[in-house]
Image (cartoon, rainbow, N blue to C red; front, side, top):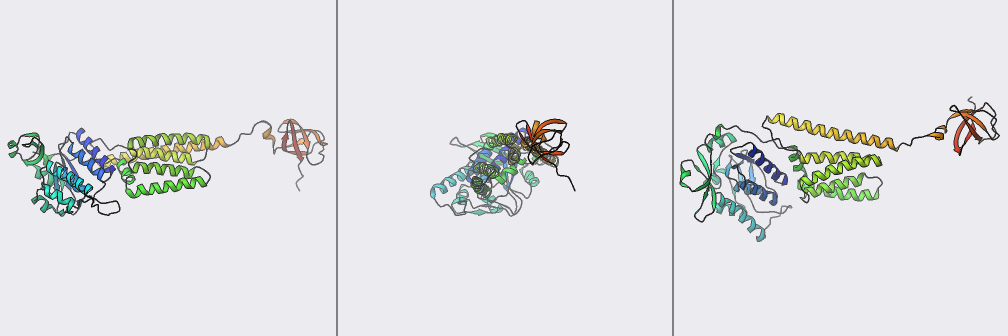
Length: 419
């Protein structure tokens, strides 16, 4: 669970609201993730206007650590056969367990308060953190940690028939969520009520992540974060010691991506910076013609596009959506590379020095109009020029070759006869 997962959940909620969905089902299978991302996902679910059911799925999978926190923050918690939840004690990135009471107590309070908010077993929630408690589906159901057991989404929706999700007011004025039968719903002083009658016949629209999610999933990987920073620093050091701009460009891009990975720079600002940087590098290629700038510019534009590539907002067959996404990205990449190549070629052309006037005469062959002793006149390329011989004397009519220019006088030598 990373910041990419957080962005994914946020986008799911937006898509569901636009589609006027009755229920959001999140299929969960995770070993955990970073605390900040988990907390933000919990907050997104709690503030959702549409009920969220987190389903530990498929059978045999697990929702350990951060996954259990998300499960406790969901309006409805469900598990498939053979699944496991628990092991919520925080750990360092190295895998070392954190025992400091400051962190343990804070995370214990977080999961307990969310369990209380959804009328779940607060004792089990506390033991998830302090004792690394693990529960299977049957134990979790008996212990009032989850509300439903099912082996697929269809059976899950079938079991929701005749049930209502209530947000009711307690005696002390606070509100809590509870899943009850529709008949029992009238007993509660509820603030909100969601009935699931006919939910099993509802149309299922499966969310398809945008390409930005897959790109950011790689970018937010802790190993990739560290690798980008190391490669970036070494590339900058290498660039200082070597000529050209290639190493410095690679280093700068890697360090910039590392800053995004560590969360120092947000996605939208980072994508905008990459766009501007890409266009600037391609324009700079016109001035320098080094080659690497055009390539780096194209790379920046493509990465910026991937970061902002939206998830599909259309309700259509997912295979068609995937084809559209792949087609658009292919066109974007091809256009960026083609544009960079054209700019590179234009820059290379500008580097070629154009010969004009007398410079075009150098290397040309003509003949002597008068004797050159050592000065005289010659005719070359249809023009008459004053010339000076560099190797003795040249008689009228002999072939000469232009070696250079000295003011308005051509420097020539006799063309030796071929044998």
